[in-house]
Each structure stands twice: as C-alpha cells, then as structure tokens.
Image 1 (cartoon, rainbow, N blue to C red):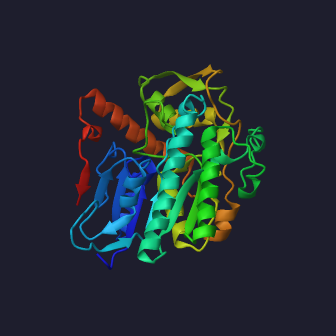
Image 2 (cartoon, rainbow, N blue to C red):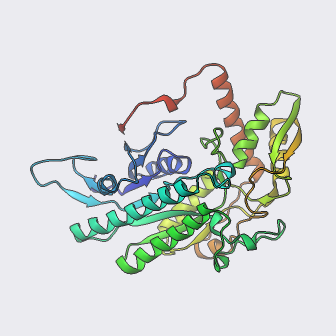
Length: 364
C-alpha cells in the first residue's frame, strides 16, 4: 500500500467524481470515494466507498485520514495514520438551470457547498499539524457560473477569460458560492501552505450524468426529450428562445485536463471547457441529428435560462498545460444520447438500476 499513491475523491457518487475514480484506478492509485449517495448508474471503482455527509465536520476529519485499518478504524493501540497524496473536491449542492436559477434553493446551495469546503480545508490543516506533514494536494472544482453576468450579455461575444472575473457579479448565488470557495482555497494556500489546484468547469456532460429529475444539465435534458419522441419525431420544449449560447465539454476530456492540472505546477484558476460555442437551438438540432428524428421546438420564454452567452476561453490552459479539447459536440452528444436511450429502454422494460443499492461501505 505504501508504494501506491492514495487519492480521496469527494463527491464520488456523482457524475464527475465517479469518472475520476475510474481514471485514478486505471493509473494505479488506491482510491477512497466519499458521497452522501452511492453512484446511481454503475459500481464505484473506488477501493473503499463511504457514504456520509460532508457537512459534518467530524465525519470529514475521518475522511481525510488514511488509517491502517480502513475508514473509521479504532484501536486501543496507536493507529498508523497518514495523509492522502491527493484530494479531489467535487462535492457540492448543484444542478441545472431549473435548480440553480429559480432562487428557490439559493440558501441551501450556498450553505451546503460552503460548509463542505470549509470542513475539508479545516480538516486537512488539523491533520497536517497532527502529523507534522503537508503533502496533500487538493483540487477544487469551481464553475464558469462565477463569471460576471455583465460579461455574458452578448450571446455572440461572451468574455470568460480567467482575468475577467473581477469586478465580480455572478448571476446566481451558486456562482457567488463558487467564487467564494475559490478564494477560500487560495487563502488556505497562502496562510497554511496547502497545495491547491482550482479549475472552472464549463458545462461537463456525458454518460452516467443526471438525465432526469430536475437537476440535469441541458445536453442530458435535451437528449432525454428527443429520445422520448416517437421514431418519426415530434415537438420538444426549449427553455428560453433557444438563442442563448453555451459550450459543452465531454467528460473524458474534463478528466484528462483535471489530471494534467494536478500533475502540473500551475495553481489556477483555469478554465476547463470547450470553445465550440453553439446556441441551444443548435444543441437541439445536434441531438435530433444523432437520433435521426425530425424535431420541432416549442419555446417556454419565462423558463430559467441563466446568462445570455457563455463560452470557455482556453488560451491560458493551452499556455500552461498544453491541453486542448479535441472531440466535437456531435461526437459527445452521440455517446450521451445513446446512453440515455439505453436508460429509458431499461426502465421501460423493468430493468432494476443501481440506484436502489443500500450499500453503506463498499471495499474491494
């Protein structure tokens, strides 16, 4: 075990966290995954998966310590403890436009996510002091939602360069919390020498992401709506006028960029996203194309839509990490659409999914 790098993935039951567990295992890491829920669509690749609430400071204190007997191990004799080599912090209260932009959940979003980040950093500082070490590198997943609304009013020319973040004016409390937590991690770096890496994700999508229930992002929501149409096609609802712009990054490319950031000497914050900007209308047309269906659009103009335009600017990540996306939106939507179609078919035929698991801790 001592020869293996050890990683802690927080939010390991979610979309990006579960994919990161798979990637780290493929690289030979020993992985502990933590989440309030087990992954919904597949088994966790983590060696040890622990379900628990990261808003609980005592629980987080246990999470960040690697013990010889495993999570929560207690003994009357001294227990060998060491820090993790890397922590990936994906855990947050979040969702799509229908969850973030209605303002019905703002207090929970800010309280829950900020509590998690405060607990993680405080726990790591205490562990470092107790052990006399300071080697754990922590990745924090921020979001493009922290960029100022006034820089994203023109759907054809949004400004999402990293240095455009100030003067700050996010369009949602979710964005404000992300900006606060960025500053929190950087402050702990300055005051406690915690090695941190910060990335601003731009609309990550792909298989095994939430695709129904109100927290799904646009690619999954539109893919689901198109998949549920008959073979000849039909009409789907589009939120807004469909002219708002976004870019979307496929999950595998997100994971690759994140790993490169962690392996580098660059702290960030840095954008991780695609520069293939499309309107929501074009996103619908792409899903219709891969489905082979004729799709008409019905617009709900009073629905929550977020900023008018948003697109990643990758100049800095190309300069610092030599990374760039390579997959087209159509390629990613095809994989995502096929997976969502399989999910729909499985449910229609009564196939039991993994969301019914009662597992509390899974060790393999």
